[in-house]
Length: 385
Ligand SMILES: Cc1ncc(COP(=O)(O)O)c(C=O)c1O
Image 1 (tube, helix red, strand yellow):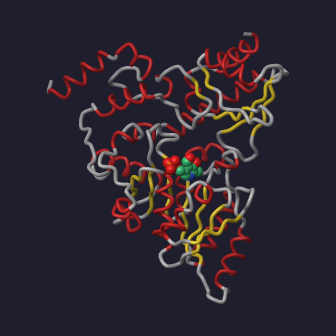
Image 2 (cartoon, protein in one colour; image 1 turned 180 degrees about the vertical axis):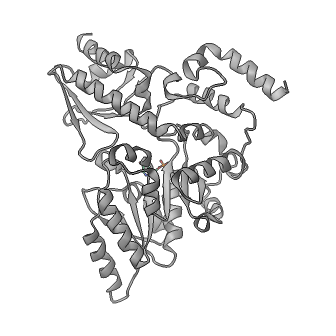
Image 3 (cartoon, protein in one colour; image 1 turned 90 degrees about the vertical axis):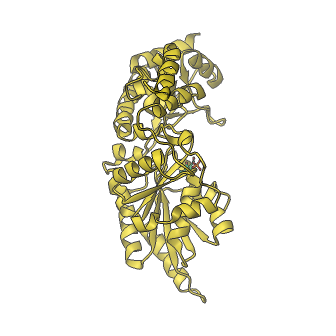
């Protein structure tokens, strides 16, 4: 045994009692059901705590053939990029340290000299990115579909024509679409309307970017694969820290020409981490299994919902065209008290809406650490003490 493997083996052995709760045997790939027993209804992924993350990282990086990156290029990062690109049906991909920067780099490159960019008014890019596109890349964002998830073809056409017909004609260079939409309770964009918008954009020579931070949740609800979605767009961003349990990071995928040289722009924006592997090395192992785990999680959540509905104090609402969220209200107890009591039983509940006390429950693979019966029992018991 060489020194590296001796150290790895001995540190895994030392951590064995805790590790057995977190990643099972050191030779197995960690999966949702063998991680800690906590069920986290607040998160998009497993909600690993720092200790669990550190152990999972150690388990990942002490495998044979693990190669670190250098300045976010090569090694485990190149492998991650290739695997995500292939899964999405794209030729190439680039690791980017945040989704905020991934959206910005994509739209900036796709726009070229056509500086107008159509976005959803409810998108992260328009609301939560500090006007980076305007301030740092001289782009002009046009927010459409206020209060809605889906941009209709009619409004796209209207704005494309209006832009082209100004006294100084300005071409719309890019349409950027977030799907599912975080600010709309993770609602899906209509696939049919998306197709119509994309066909029209192609006819007009307008480029297309997708903010697919949580796009791996779409197939279960829409029946369309992540490849079906990605195929409509020139570039697609997927978050690595939401479904794939990384500490941070994003994948930006597109054709080889789009990705070529983009790592220089990433660096220009200060986004080439000298060592990116600690952020994302754990993510690759979840890529192939995530969709199945999410489907199983919803099956368990639906069973939980049926059980809770047998008690009139529990009221559940689903989101129309929704993905990972459902709403839960519980009468006869304060949200704070039920949160505290559920926490003691190993179930983390999300914050409630202060106006109505409704929990915005997130369905994710951590649900598979328990069973519908056990979860329902914990809720019922929490109403008593
Ligand atoms: C839809 C969407 N896009 C982009 C981002 C930005 O990702 P990051 O926090 O990695 O910058 C987020 C983050 O929550 C998001 O929800």
